[in-house]
Image (cartoon, rainbow, N blue to C red):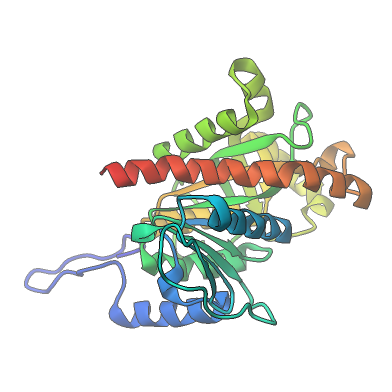
Length: 314
């Protein structure tokens, strides 16, 4: 069913869902193991990242929301450590933070109806991206969004610019047997609109200025962390695909969203331009992260807020 290969036979029952009961049970067990939190805490809007700095920012944001906000009723960290918003719930705080983090720690800003936000640090690479999306999909989230960094491929891009993926070039290879690379992975209009509006609202940029700082185009995801060493092989591919950025997870997350029927989106931030001699060095990287991570996360949270309003209205 998931991969579009099911053919109904006359007289035989048709599937009731995308997944069998055994598959769901397996994924729920894997989620508890990988994320270090109970399944009840997962929210229907999911952000994936591979940078700890986004996690740190999310923790700070989550605790501030519980202390003074009126949207989320609890914030949950690995180990099922729960702090609660006394203005929205009578439930007391409970649990303790895990001393050692699990492989893909999850953090949850809990809202009524599971309409809050879950952030998962998936680590680096397409294999991890496939693993976590394989299992989160059984929870049937409203959408998932990749929020992370990328290498810019165009000389007109500047460090700190945003990339809104509207196409994906798949050099990750982890899903080739499930979905042929000849199948296009289309953008999801509602997610694209929400992310675009959020960038404009959070940055204050409009019109031509917004277009100069937010590039929409093809993102290449590769399974080779040192893809720069193969540039002679890849240069023609980059040119033919009109790619504007390269990372290691976005295409995998989008492809699994497509085949598992979960709306998906990607908003990346250009952190280096290795083909143009702009490589992250420690001092420059620290300054970049301090300036951009907070804004980037706020953009994605704002986009989730817009989509949440649509869900609540429905």
